[in-house]
Image: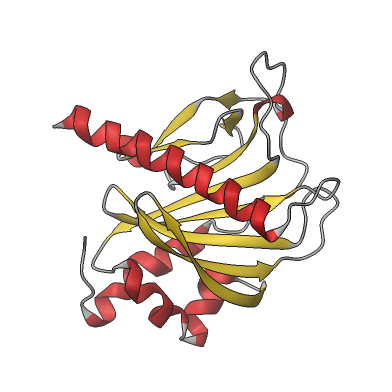
Length: 203
């Protein structure tokens, strides 16, 4: 696990700020794929069962991916997901920061605004996943006719890169806090498994 080294730790965190806001909605119109290689193959974006990556709205070069139920992107013959929502993944640069330091960095108002934007920060919590304890920021995003305002932003490491996964339910079927947490854990499980396999294959 990488360590923090003072101001150097800000770099990979700030680099997450470039694409963390979801693009304008509606945006799902095709281009769904089971996975997408980001940053030249360093990280694989993938979702839980029944979810696909929207390749038209994602930016592999920027380490950014939109992940949503496959049936929102065209005909889909698989099983629809139990929890329907919208996920986004932003992968930052490699750098000297650790998960324990994320909360300290976000205590700085400028850093917090750069990363979370204009969203109202409601609270901070943690999630226990198979890969360890994850820091979660709960925010209230601007109103949308497609997704609910309540949003969870989960911080984790993928391929030694600080990353954030954002999770929201739909406006027609909003998820409870527990539902968002479960969807977030499903997403983290899929991401860590895919990128663990990539690391094994590379070695």
